[in-house]
Image 1 (spheres, one colour):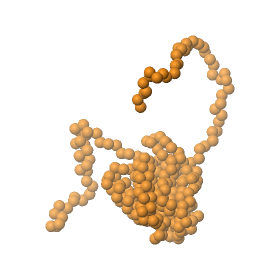
Image 2: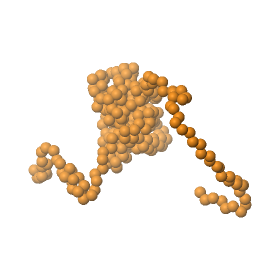
Image 3: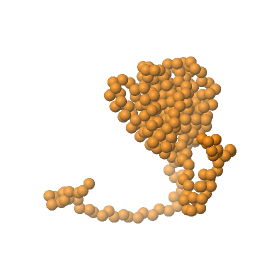
Length: 275
């Protein structure tokens, strides 16, 4: 009790709700939440790591890109699957990839997965979650295969299978029911595909195709796409109407005169234009 004289009250705390209500009464509007949509999956098997991700990028309720690449190459045997804000994931992984390349040149050997995780988590921790970048890092190094997840505020954990994003709840159900310690490559690829497809089919922010990368001792093998889950449907009817289907009630022609403009070449007296 001398070390902790004031124990927290049991139950839920609504102090922030009261604070937000007081700020709104003074004219300060609270910022709304940001909805992101992604399903990324990583699974370790006996010879390496398999990463999978969907390919839909959304802006609110609009599908901005149907073929968004969410699997970022960090080195020859290390890849990173990103969820959250697309621009943050792209720029953070691009910046860290440059640091990793310099590290490999200076040391003369391949970088380890733990080093990549340490560099990224230290960078994200500085911004306390304001960079919307949730990552799953998988790879193969001198100590074997590894799979880590990094939250936007910098915390990380290492597990044999991981999933992140708004479709992670559906993907987790598939992983927990079917994962085994010593899966072979084909079974692992099928598991990653089904887990990612579960997120695609049960989450509006995830969609299109399943992209996949296999990381082993020999290097990486990418599958873009591995499977198209939400293929575009075929129109059931014909929408080409012949000319004259719509009746023309009246026609009016307005003549439009084009003004003649004289065009001349530049002379020595003309001043150059500033840019």
